[in-house]
Every structure is written in C-alpha cells, then in structure tokens.
Length: 377
Image (cartoon, rainbow, N blue to C red; front, top):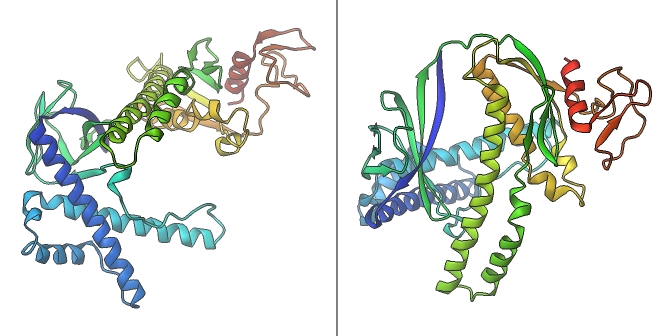
C-alpha cells in the first residue's frame, strides 16, 4: 500500500539563501492575502468567489507591472492560493456541522496573515531532488542540510515546504512510499496511564519521566518576556529581544516534543519482533479541554501534551501492527484495585500510593491504574 510520510530537517543557509527563502515565504503570504481580499470583495458584491486557478491568472497579469514577482517560483503563489481555498473549505464545513449541532467552537474564518506573527512558509511542487546532505528546490537551488542521510533519496516526493522558526530554517517533505502491511503484534497487552508527575506509567512496570519543560524554564521565559516588553516598539533592540524570546519558546516545545516521541516509540517498539511488540495498547479518553479549566493544574497539564501523546501512539501503533483501545473517560482506573477489582469511593490526588482496604494490595497509584487499564481490554 502507498502511505504518505513527512520528514523535517533543519537547513544550513547562507545570507543569500536566507534572503531568497524570505522572498518565497513573503510571496506565498502576499498571494494568500491577495486572494482573501478578492474573495471578500466578490462576496460583498454578490458575485461567486474566485478560486485558486482564477486568482493565479490574475496574479500572472500583475507580473507585467510587478518586477519582484519574477524573483520567486510560481509555486509560492499557487500553493498560497490553494491554502486559502482549503481554509474556506474547512470554514464552510464547520459552519454546516455547527448548524447541525455536531460541532462546537469557532469555525475558523481565514484571517489576514501578518509577518509580525511569523514569516510563515512556502510549499514547492515539481522537480525536487534530494541527496544525502542537500535538497534542490525550484528557483532556490541546492540547499545544504544540517543532518546527513536523514531524508530518503530514492523516493517519490509530493511536495517540499520551507519554514522559519525562531531564526532557524527548516524543510519538510511529503514522501509517497510503498509499505507492506505490518505483521500483527503478538506481545502482551499494555495499559498506559498518563499523568503530571510521570509522563506515562505502563502496566509492564516501565515509567517515563515528565521533562516539565515549561516549569523548568519558566523563570528564564518570564525574564525574557519582561525584557521584550520594556523595549521601545519598532526598535532594533525589541527585535533582538523578540528573537531571544522566540528561541526560548522553541526550546521548550522541542524538549516536550522529544520526550513525547521517545516515550511513544518505546511503548510501541515498532523495530522489535512481533512477539515483543504489544498486541494492544490501552489508554484513557481524557477530556483535556475540560482538565485545562482547573486553574491550579492547567499549566502543569498543558506542559505534558496529553493529546499529542495519544496522537503519536495511535499512528505509530498502526504502523507497527498494534491495536489501540480507548477506554471511556468515566472509567475509574485510579480508584479500581488491579488485584481484586474493588472500587474506592474517594481517592484524593495527594494519595500517590494505592492501598486496597479489601485485599490489602499496595502499589504506586499510576502503576495500579495502568494495570487496571490493561485488564479493561
């Protein structure tokens, strides 16, 4: 079967290449804003809204009087307009679901893109060539990679996207690869209990530490935020402080992302034989948005990345031939004894050791919950 996989790696650009990348990203952002303005004008006049193909023909006519458009690839304009079409498609889809009572929240009307909130990204299609230490993109030429032999060389590449984050440039490619059906795993069932103190506790006795990326760097983050707010708006010093603050936010996000990937990959164990991979992974259907309303624990809960953990486990397990079962959020996994099945009436968060009053079973609270989830299969 054909599957789509994404690979993302940092670029090693010189000043000339950084300027070229900024031009392409700016052109994509300009095309998006131009299309948004034209659609709004057509809607206000009672006319059908133009689609990406029509808008791109208009932009081609503008090139005769706008010389800077010849400095960038046509992909920047095309993909920016296609992103706008996708944004309106999802907006109308959510509006329809909201009228039917199947969706709650904002529908997400496409908004104007400002470079003050980030340079954005630019997507390329067509001829894209990948080598062990470089990638060749239309109009940008050969760009060096900071990591060797990571991107697949002999593969069908659907698209490549360049983006900037905290002063660093990245490229991500979408690869269409042929993959065999994963051999079904025949290992034991594993229950996974997510928490704040420990990122995840498994029924096989393994536990994964929560890096607490935000909590450990909160003091530095506050200091950099104060320095940024004290600088004069529009000054060069404010831009320098903004870059420092952005790098700290990126560092916190990368620490959290690395811990989640290591934990989920270790649980799924897709590189191991089928008899050593878990046949089923049982996790809870946590109400993360509801848990974030607790003003005392909201910061600690958000620092874990509970939904991202579930997302990674789901797609990695599918690739490894493991089944994933989601247990109802109302299932009392923490209050249930994994030895005799007795359910406690009350259990405070401060009680980190589970003690069963019926059978006398004593165990760590998270470990007991994980064993209970494993038995709930």
